[in-house]
Length: 114
Image (cartoon, rainbow, N blue to C red; front, side, top):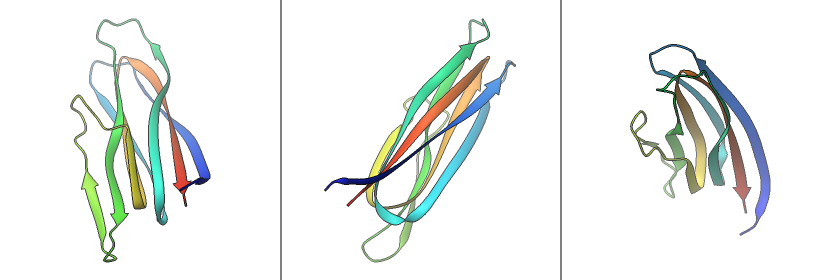
């Protein structure tokens, strides 16, 4: 199997306060073999001692062999978020970032395989 196309993008979140702020984004496409990856792009710490940044997948949807669309939800807001996912019939990814006392940027890549 070879990489036949790739998409990339970025998103950001900002929170100068003491509470946790969560932002989420999504990407949808026709069912195909796809590999989604998240990376921390940049961050600016406002000088607090309790700066926090977390990125990860929130859910994916995939088409199963029988044609059914299945959604898998991943824990978010805990430690150990999932930053990557591959599936032969991937159709949708929701990803997010949680921040506190920081500006942060994430980068994603979405590779299509065939």
